[in-house]
Image 1 (cartoon, helix red, strand yellow):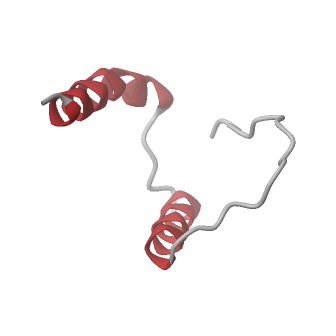
Image 2 (cartoon, rainbow, N blue to C red):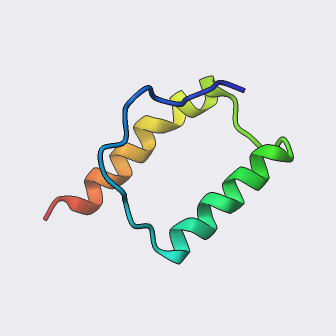
Image 3 (spheres, rainbow, N blue to C red):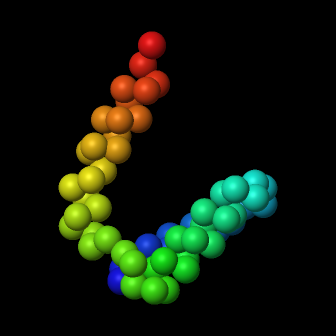
Length: 59
């Protein structure tokens, strides 16, 4: 697994809603169980995500 921590100092607290915290917890649990996607596969998926996002924001 790749350590993706950024060396950026936290300058302020961020409030996160319960739904987001639940999703983060599920993601951490999945990673702990080995349910991950290889980095190269994720890189291939990103353009699709961007395309999908852009098609929803244009009006």
